[in-house]
Image (cartoon, rainbow, N blue to C red):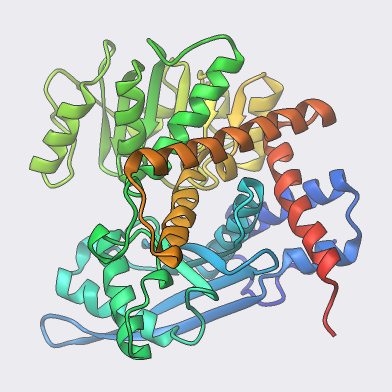
Amino acid sequence: MISKSLLLPEPASPAHICPFDQACSYLEAAAKELNLNQGLLEILSHPRKVVTVSIPVKLDDGEIQVLAGHRVQHSDVLGPYKGGIRYHPAVTLREVSALAMLMTWKCALLGIPYGGAKGGIPIDPKRYSVGELERISRRYISELIKDIGPSVDIPAPDMGTSAREMAWMMDTYSVNVGHAVPGVVTGKPLSIGGSLGREMATGRGVMIIVREALAEQGKSLVGVRVAIQGFGNVGSAAAELLYEAGAKIIAVSTGAGGVFSDIGLDIPQLKVYAAENRKSIMGFPESVPISNADLLTLPCDVLIPAALENQITEENVNQVQAQIVAEAANGPVTLEANLALEARGVTVLPDILANAGGVVVSYLEWVQGISYVFWDEERVNREMEHLMVHAYHRVIHQSKVRQISLRLAAYTLGVGRVAQALTDRGLYP
Ligand code: GLU
């Protein structure tokens, strides 16, 4: 049994599905498969550093509000810490810690020289003005100024943040150190050293992994029926690229509910509609409304949860009808639900593989930034495609050789690479 709560508060309640406990269970399963010794498992179960800062912010009405800002650095055995910053009301320290651990395995699986980190502020960004969000982002990053840097820890966008927040953070860091430091964040606007292809990268990665999984079954994307939960950065890019490749996107949703069309939604039109209606997709012509819960159980070939964690659980797993579930979000399928899907022969494409496109292009952005050579979009997409397809085939191979699920295969590859590096580096002192 590992002592996994050393630096973290206890879970909210025993009934609550704790994302950190879930991440540790996957780690333990991988460690067992790899025969890792207990000491290594203990080290990997603990984040290396957990930071919580208070963020006092002056609101537009003159009131002062104090927010909590977290940054969890799980491992830097393979290179600088890397991971997004999330603005969402459900953010907790245990959730951020779980996501930081997932980043470690994700980077290791993809063979990119980073460790894992994650940050988060428990707010609903829609409730704050642009000016307030700017003040929150700047104060958060200035509180963390000693903990981040282009060779220390490199934040990126995550749920509720985008290139806009990255620009504020890059500027705040740069002003504080006295010169421009583009490499301190990725997912930046192009004007300050962002990469072509970064915006669509996570969605593109999802499309590539789904395409490869279908190819494994002798199928192509053409005509495949897909349901996507989430129409944010990841869900909308995946929808667009799958649509372009010939798939039929029969349903998509946002937090407020979804839209369904049996003949398939016109995704380019839906994107225009959402842009014109303050991101709402409800009322899209020639579609009928569908709830988030019903979307998950639609008859379809491919289901892509691209929103929050814990969406497919013991409660609804038996109603899931898709043959392929691609985890575009982090942790959308619970441990028990995952076992039930596997037992039914459903292919579950695990998050650390399926949604790795974002961090892969973050890496390519960082490489371009530190070498002062910028590539065209075709080159970025080609390099990313190569890394994603290679990782996919390594996972398939591992799963066949060891007779284990794709998730466990992905974890054994990620955890195994970090454990090897840790063993080779040795323990200081
Ligand atoms: N937030 C994204 C993820 O969870 C991207 C992280 C990054 O680019 O560093 O993978």
